[in-house]
Length: 368
Image (cartoon, rainbow, N blue to C red):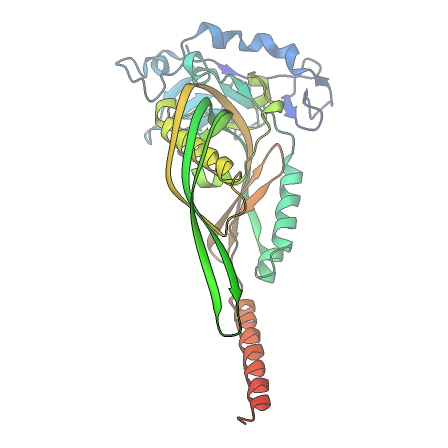
């Protein structure tokens, strides 16, 4: 049976949330705090139920656990509808939602069936930065962009800001890499009549054994891979064993891109990193051109983790703009509108400068 988990304050009955500042569970009503470890017994259900079936392992009974649940049903749109254990209101969630909040009473709910069995993450990096800090980062980010419209900085409104635990596959691998390059060295000299250039060509070989750990690959189709990679790195030293209490007050998704599907992207990232590492050892040449590379992966293993991400959506003149912030480090990225007037003024200034320079040259040459 799929069980909804919620966290109530033992002191006042309020809804507990994970507090990123103290790294503890905190009640926003009476300010009581509790160590996450004190709520470990809540997760016993994750070890006793089979949970949902991951997308790469479909079976005839894929959705049987939904039918057996006493607090879940499907609506006409194909969304799951859960009954809030706090107020009895209906919580709608798609098939990949693992943690959410009740839209009526704000009760934090973890959908345990989506975090059980093979869907249970090995690790989680808890949020270190809160919603207020994410908003401040947005303000700082936009204020430093000189070509962003002034009105955007003052008039844009946050339509949505969400703290989401995004599923990631983490890959470890030993590799043997070798690369062949062609390098050139150039020597020039001159005599009283001529200038000479001598170009020498060299075959360069580099080979090495390397180990890579925790190479992340986004396991959610909701999140563009490029956006998630742009807010890296995450510091795995802060990762802890997974516990559902860390999700309280945030959203979370289970993976819908399986480990097997993620291997090619992990291999590509490892290959590029290995080639870059070997390239950094080649010095003293005018040019270096790779001719051949071979990267063999050995003893690869994977882990499943949830990483913290703030997603901010803004609306400006009918257009949507999305920003993402690493919930651990604060690294911030996003797309911005461009003030065409400022850009035109820049090009006009450049053109005017070029024109003035050309005029001065002509004056010196006596052309005008």
